[in-house]
Length: 324
Ligand SMILES: [Zn+2]
Image (cartoon, rainbow, N blue to C red; front, side):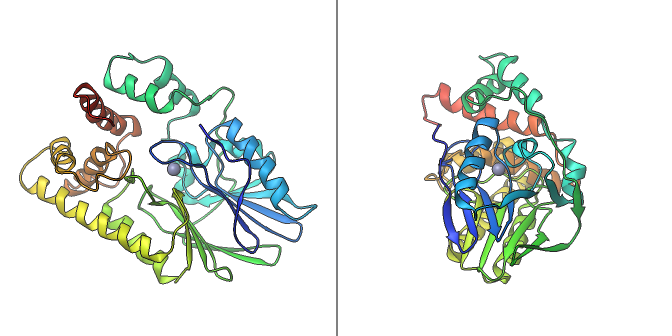
């Protein structure tokens, strides 16, 4: 696994930590906003090893004398929050919904158990080992947000204006995005994936599309996704077209009485955007969408249950000798 040792400058006072996460779970982007003697981190990495690498790189990128005293979590998934504990005493800002839903996220210990204490020849155990076996969860502890808001929250980092706005329910129930109006940049969190199929735990897909509409209404020139390379607004438009296409296919499967798994398998067999990585995420997206179509969309199904469906599809493909 290649962990970046330096941050990439995106704009004045804004750097991003961009691990090459294509085709992999757990490698998320983080961003550093720094000005004068203040610094704020948007999201923290998945493991202690990555968090140390990010903190050291941040130390070289920010103005002399600045320290990271605030963290923003775009949503509660571990690959954006498990590094919180490293920044002792930092204020951790997120939405009310993110704080509430943090309790239903798999903890580092539960994820480690999934990797080490499941049957390796069953789909879920096999998948957990394939995708999460390379991460060390030892000693990781979940530190929740210490300051939460709903709607919008505006703050300053030195002289830089930072606008946080709630964009969910979309990827999760309480996603937030970070808008830097003077820099023309939006940090989109996991509402936006680039180069891989996205995964959305809360949905529906229409919610993700409207979050993208909100993003584009700010007319940013640069968008940092939760996973994948930095892009411009055209990539967000293409992504919205992808989501609309998928929404149509899943709704069609539902109308024809297929199960979510059958609908996803059919969509994948037809080669839906086959150049993108982690195709089994379509099984998760279809399952989440089906819950909304069935009138049970307010609560997201347990993450592990959703993983189970994706694991089943990937496992079947691997037995067929199809590269996953
Ligand atoms: Zn993520």
